[in-house]
Each structure stands twice: as structure tokens, then as C-alpha cells.
Amino acid sequence: MSRKSTFPLAVLIDGDGFHPAGWLHPAAVTGQAGKIDRMIEMARVAEAAKIDLFFVADTPAARTDQLDIWRRWPKFMNVLEPMTLLARLAGETSHIGLGATVSTSFFEPYNIARQFASLDHISNGRAAWNVVTSSNDYAPRNFGLDRLPPHNERYEKARESVEIVKAYWDSWEDDAFIYDRQQSSSFDPAKQHPVDFKGKYFTVHGALNQARPPQGHPVIIQAGASGDGKELAAETADVVFSAAGDLEASRAFYSDLKGRMARYGRDPSELKVLASLRCSIGKTRQEAVDKYHLLQSLIHPDVGIKMLSEQLGVDLAGLPLDEPIPPGVIPQTTNREKGFFERLRALILAHPTKTLREIYQLYDYGTAPICGTPTEIADLLEEWIDTGAGDGFMLLFNTLPSDLNDFVELVVPELQRRGRTRTEYTGQTLRDRLGLKHRANPHPSRTRDKMVS
Image (cartoon, rainbow, N blue to C red):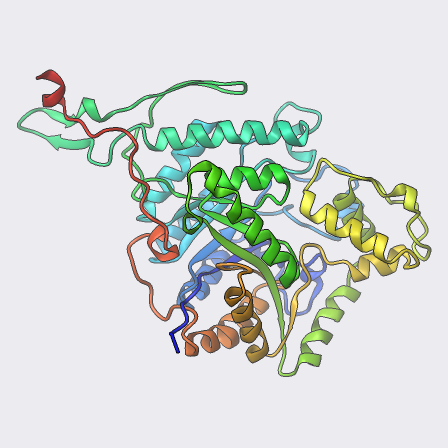
């Protein structure tokens, strides 16, 4: 029997936990997303388990209204700026990849290119950029806008932004900076390739004022589940976070996304799909289920209503908690995250007699967790990989740091025993460890002497 391959693991660190009531759990450490020592500790825990990527989600905004509700679900309300955070973590770790969200809707391509190139140099080739277009109207108000542009316009702008960022990363060849004292030449002028771009959203001309990143291009991550999002990922991404939900839906997403790559001249192996999963781990499956149900019971009604409202893009406040959601309230589409919206809409329509309270207790913000023993969870993770539902996993944790600690102490050793996850880091960069090639500079290699001759 042939030996099965290993698969990559990434961890998403989201405040005090991904679950809306995670911070209320007795095992949570509150406020840790704003404390550097706590973030360093979690990064070291992940690195000790030989996790491939430590990822920090972000939005460039705090909520500024309905604060009596948001105080009960303090998501992104007290966090460290991600690029500053990852630069510090680069100095506190040696091998684990370091990724963060930066929005193309609000940040200039030059700044994005420069920040991630710097992080790649600082970390010796471990940087990753999660490309997002943002999904709520708090962020645009910080940048002089009333609301987000329409979904398709955000993706048009994102496509231009990614193209420009990549061009800036390629604005110097790998060996352009030579520091030749005898020739009094710090760099080879022939090996600069300035960006000259004019599009619908950006007009730029220039080059980075630093050497090309160690990875060529830092790893590009995306998570869009809409048609626009999948097209952008098929064209430009190295890694995609899949939040398709169950095994069958994840297989369909995986096949659909990989099938789009040929029209962009890309091989499916050039893109790694990491399925987003959460685990509730117990000595028995029932113990794991009970742990999850406890969290669901801690969701405050204000938060439950706000959570559904955010995902649907309509305000459900004022509807009776213990009556069904009227069908006419449910929109056909949204300007927010398409994947989460479609899954919630399908849940409501499939349970027309369930009350608003029952729906928010039944619904899970994201994808419902796997509940089981370490052995059962390892079995399921193997099944996902071996049946074409993903290339690896982006792991989310209901409560931090307890659920992270449980996973690395209980599940990772079982996966390592089976030969499915790494026991030592190999390769020099994050690209190496994910099985992605170094991004070669597309410009023809030249030297000044050749040009002069």
C-alpha cells in the first residue's frame, strides 16, 4: 500500500476565539488579541506543533454604533494592527508562516507590496497576504466613503490591486542589488523593471525601494466564495480558505475552483485549498458535543440577532424572538460575504417553523465545528483530504487559547503518528513548506554590460 502524503495545517487566531460567545467561556483569556505577549505565546505553541501558517484576520475599523450590542460580541474591537504584530512575531519565531488580512478596498497597492515584501525579508521568506475586499460599512467610513461599493466593483478593483502588487514585487530582479565597491555600483540598473500601470481604479508608475522578496512573491491567500471571488482566486491565489461547510460541499467547491484554473494557464497544483474547520474535542464524542452546546447557549440574544442581521444584510432587530422569521424579510442576495449569506438563507428556508432564537442557536457563524475524540477528528481530517475536499486545513478555534492547546496536544500527535502532518519543518520558506514554487521574475534577465554593448 502506498504511503499517504502529509497535508499542511494553518491556524487562524481571531481575538479570544472565533465563536461569538467564545470570550464568555471560563477557559478563555479575555483581551488577548491586543496583548503582544499572548500572541507570541500562541505563535510559539503553533510553531512547536510544526503548524505551517499562523494567520491573523483583520478589519480596518471598529464598530461605532449599537455599542450596547457589540460590547457583547467584541470582534475586532481591541486588536493589534496585523503587519506590526507579524513583524514582531517574525522575531519571536523561526519557521512558521505569518499571514494577515489587508483589504484592497482601502490600502494602496504600493503600500501593500512594500509591507509584505518587508515582512518577507524580516521573516526570511515566511510572509502571506490574505486578499480581501472587505464586507461591512464600518471600514469605508474610515476612508472617506459612506458605504462599500457594489460587490462586482470591489472585485474589479481587487484584480487591479493584485496585478500591481505583483508587479511591484517584480520591479527588481532577484540579484539586482550587488554592492560592488570596485565599480561603485550598489545595484544593476538594467535589473530594475518599473511598474507602469493605468487602469480603471489605479494609475501608478514606480518601483519598490527594496530588494525582491525572498519568496519572489509572498504567498497570496484568498477566501472568496462568490463567482467573482473564485475567478480571482483561480487567476491569482496561491492558497484559498474554503468555508464550504460539509464534506460534500467542500468537494464541490474544490473541484469547481481547481477547474477554473486552466483558463488562466495555471496547473491545479499551483493552488492549495485549505478547508476551514473548527474542532470541539472531548474524551468522548458526547463530551465534545456538550462543550459546543455550552458555547451556543452563551450567545446573548442581542448577539444572535445581530449575527444573523450581519450575515443576511438586513436588520432583524424588533422581530419577536420566539416566532419564525417572516419569509418576506429574507433577501435574495447580499453585498456581503456570499458564502455565509447563502448558507444562512438556506438554513432559514429549510426550517420555516423554527423561531428566530432557535435559528441563531442552530446557525453557526462560519462553519459548524467537528465534535469528537482526537481519533475521530483525525479520521475525518484524513477523509477530507483523501476524497478531494481540500489540500489541507485552516483551523479556527471557538475559544482561545484552550482550543488551540487541545488541538496541538491531542490531535496533532495523532496525525503525526499516522504520517499525515509534518514532524519537522523542511525547506527554507513558506512556499517550500506548502509545496509552492518560488515565483520567478517574469522579466528577461539582463545586465548593464549587455545593454551597453
